[in-house]
Amino acid sequence: MDSWALLARVVILLAVAAGLGVVLRRLGQNAIVGYLLAGVALGPTGAGLIGSGQQLHAVSELGVALLLFTIGLEFSFARLRQIGRIATWGGLAQVTLTLAAVTAILRATGMGFNESFVLASAIAMSSTAVVLRVFTDNAELDSRHGRAAVGMLLMQDISVVPLLLATDAMAENLSGPEAVSHFALKALGMAAAGVVLWLLMRYLAPVLFARAMLSKNRELPVVVAACASLGAAAGAHAVGISPAIGAFAAGMVLSESPFATQMKADVTPLSAVFIATFFASVGTIVNVPIGRQVVYVLLAAAAVMILKTIVAAGVAWAFQRSARVALATGIALSQVGEFTFVLADNASRKGMIGAADLEFLVALSLVTLVATPYVMGAAPRLADAISRRRTPPVPQPVEQAGKGGVRDTVIVIGYGPAGQEVVDALQRAGIPVLVVEFNPNTAAAFASTLPMQVGDATQLEILEHAGAAQARAVIVTIPDPSASRAIIEQVRRLAPDVPVIARGRYHQYAPMLETAGAVSVIDEEQIVGTEMAQQVLRHLASDDFEA
Image (tube, rainbow, N blue to C red; front, side, top):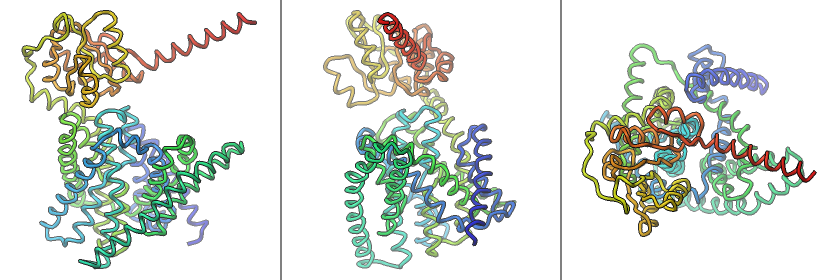
């Protein structure tokens, strides 16, 4: 194909993708769904203006690499350690259990093992791009279920490498010693490439970026950032590793440097263009289902989302012991995402799955991606409804807390920086305090010096045991607005007359918390604005006085 003709098709595809992306955002959807629909609308089964997605394959793969590079910049090794065991063992368990369950189901239908394994691998992947975007839009990225889901998503992304290696071994019909040798050679190559990549990104790239920044030439930092991300992807591809994983690893290493934020800002515009091209090109291979096929796709999508929710929620429960967190985490991981296309496309090019399987998988993925923002939005309320059904709202006898008994005690939910400030102020005023903290490590660190109860305050049993019905007041200091709303509603059911004061991290969520029953919401954005205005006026007054 002529290069200018290809460029014209890319421009048309991007223009329609941008238009549909805007429309879908207004409807509460992720823009990525609009990109997919643009490909469907312009592809062979739509208007026919764009040919097979394979024509755009080389261009669109850059989108995945750049996307994973920016994600890697967000999640340093230190942040992974903060997320905890659920980022490693939880993610590994979720991928393994989903892979085993889907493989067994497909095998039961008479499908061969290799094909079943490949399709199950693709289905086990969730959409990091969509989930992160929804969490960011809903201010849930720092929530307990947000951190749990992100940790498991990162392990999914990393697991793409061994799954691709397994697919390659199956395609070459390797078994026994040959398969072991194949994996060993690949592993050695990956290890060597990883060491080289780490050295380059740890020592060379930051120096080049610093020099580029000091040059005061705005283009040079952008070029260095693009070289870091795309160079890592190209190097990974050269040694047989997924380019996207190479870019992700480079981002993870560079996230420790002081230039990570600027690099992300420089690469994000490029990533936006290429990722739109990638998803739109994927949409071009969708054969729009008709008749019974629509029913089959919808049923398969529902079955996949239910299965993945159950598996992920079960894993999250094993680590978090909170029904609300587990359900919200499971629903967040219920869709099939961008690496689904990477794994399925790789298997298709190696002849392991047919074109019909690939088209059905893409159609199924499209349905789950469309449903994801809605089901994720409904997850907290669904968890609350299940919790209310399990626990009758009848106050139980409670233990005494603090010097003056429960009725003189103020219950503080959460012992982060905000909670610590509140507790310090109450203790200076001589008011007894009981802290309810979800993180057992935090609770253990302060239990010897402070009345502390470990538990999920969104659950009625925890609030009952803490004595919320007889408390002087309840202070909710956690940043997650949906969890705060759930806690306030539970307190209102348990103790309608106890005043609740809540933290509102973002202005848009203050009315929601007030509607839930908070007598006062501390609006962080308003407080910051007020404090900044006072500081500005103070400094201006000082300047005028000196003048």
